[in-house]
Length: 168
Image (cartoon, rainbow, N blue to C red; front, side, top):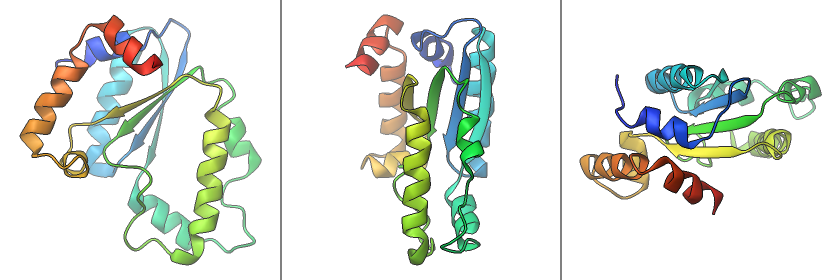
């Protein structure tokens, strides 16, 4: 898989040598190649990526097994992000929507987890990047080819313009 605009897009993030970048894929296993190529490009820019994937299937399975008294992720899980200097969220789909079979009785625990994750990363520069996926195109209400063309045009813009877009 090759994404021609990727070097430009990563340059726009303004990463520096020594940065530690949490690259979170919000997608299924079929989307893992995106995580790999983004992490590789981040490395080429001198930063150190930490790869993490949250899939709807994994989260459903993980939270199905929890009791209401069992904390799904201990405090130490969230402390691991202390050294992270930036966060790149790779969005294969809208992260707010859970798996259709996600257990309704675990939604409160899931929301607590998401809140704690967001809190652990609040002080880090965070970039949400939509991926060229069928799911994201559908969520945007667009035909896939048109969505990919729009994404390519947006992400191929001048790096300084992209930075301004993220900062606004």
